[in-house]
Length: 441
Image 1 (cartoon, rainbow, N blue to C red):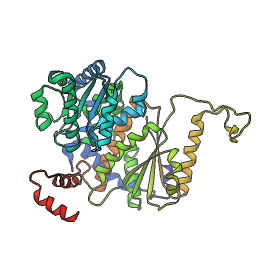
Image 2 (cartoon, rainbow, N blue to C red):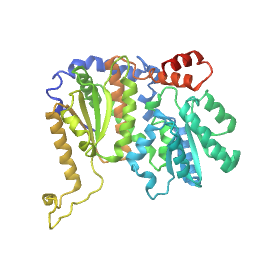
Image 3 (tube, rainbow, N blue to C red):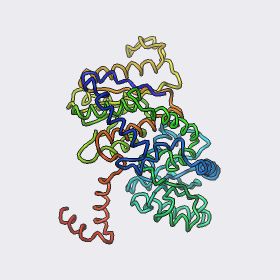
């Protein structure tokens, strides 16, 4: 389903970039398959597309239908991996303008991923008097941003529907056995779904974390899982013809050749949040111990008129990965008898043809300018192709982390800002750190 073109890396990395890493790739693949090595306890995602909980999957589908029948809005509360995957899939499959479209499914808004007062007030205004439900996603229930948002929307539900009515509209995706949210959900009787212990947040889009809001939007989550399962089966076969091995080896070779930034480029506006999901996946997985490619993203061709100059002629620290989907629809460029814009040489040609040549021309220009390029080509955007791409990037990320010799499944650096924030907010137990920080301000 996925075609990987590495031909535009010639001259940037050694010819033996793949064979010279064969042993390390083999060991990395074995660790992922056996759930061993650094972070092995968090590799449940490796076989998830095949081994997911079928009973919970059916409950997700049933809950999605219930939400669709009783609510005009679903508020999804979560931060990081608790919302990025769902938003990425919904926008990629259904449009970045999903909430503006005429449809039979609820609008879906994402909250608890920041601390903006203005954004919160705007969201409350957008919901208005409409019926709504809430999906709170948090393994602990104590992460500041989603916890604050849940307080607010829980209160709104209880004021609108009463406590009994509110509990019928709150869906908690949390730890299966412990944590503040788990305890509250048990006590209040919310319907619960599980954040698996063996799947970290940034790998959790194909669990209830992502699947419930995705299903509410009307996406066929069974087809999504089938696409991921196809990728799992294909990429589990070891060998140098495995595209995941090839891409992971190429990324590592580029890093060792001095590249420090990987730009993910998409040519569809609805790909933007998929790139945001990708940035968390690779940033949290590889960015540690002073190592890792910095993940960035651009939307072409729009960003060719903003970032294009730097990519073409700025500091030569970048590599570029382009994701291309086959177009689904067709639009023919009309003729202009006056030819005011001088573009009648395009009259009668499909828009997709113009986009294709823009992409090819951009790749050639960037390579000539010293930016190595990787091209990933997929069929048209569909549940199966998106599911395949999700798993492909996850699996490559696991291999890449092991090639870098870091733990690709932890994120110790994330805790630094939290400690400082708690101290400055006056959380009990942080008094000494608070004094130190205030002295620095």
